[in-house]
Amino acid sequence: MTDLSEEDERVSSSDEEEEEDLEREIERELAEVPLGELHKARAAGFHSASSSGGGGRRRIPDEEKKTSRVNKNRPMEMSSRKPVGRFRQIIQVPKKKLQKLVKKSKEPEETEKLKKHISWINDGTSLASILTVVSYQDKQLKSESGKSRDAEILAEHKKKEREAAKHGKRPFYLKKSEIREQSLIQKYNNLKAEGKLESFIEKRRKKNASKDHRYMPYRRPANEN
Image (cartoon, rainbow, N blue to C red; front, side):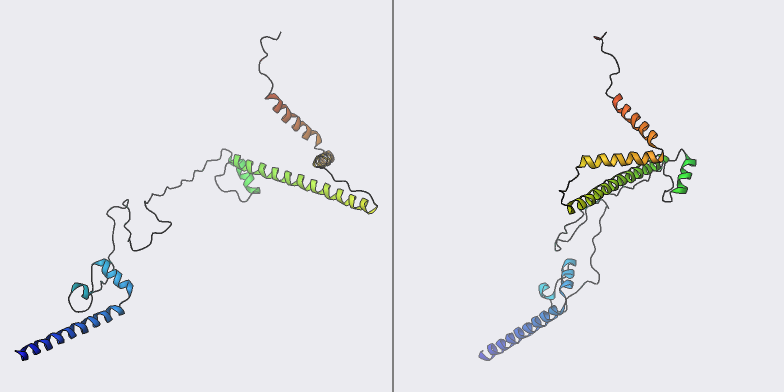
């Protein structure tokens, strides 16, 4: 009886040693497999040999399992293992198609004449928009010329005051109203030299008359005789 019990103990110990060796071999094989492949295998439903309880090598899927939506308007399924992006798209909104509306020009001859002088005009541009651009550019040029004229007046005044300060005189600083007055005098002198002063005054008179016309009553009150 003692011999049989000793033999059974030796057999059981040898079986335990074989199981330990097998577990060590499986752990060594799993350590060599990359972590990404392990996640892919677990997501696809494959488990390691140790978790299934059987021996042998662990099965790794050849292709990653891809989820497809039944309907394109359905929300997309995302893995919970990945962090949620800051700029994620929850619901796909269909993009609106922008339609370019091109108005036909009513004055093709005048438009063609302006196109000869202005090379950057695109096809289909109306005459009104072209004239708006031209008038805006004229206003910009006039404002720039006015600013440059004010700067010239101020620079000339500073030059005179520096010369006067050398002789012991106190400097005199121009106010904005005085600069404006001298600028208008210089502007009218230039218009008079070019022969455009009368037309400029007539345009200004009509403009002021149209402004005053808004405040005039249309009908005389009934209580006045």
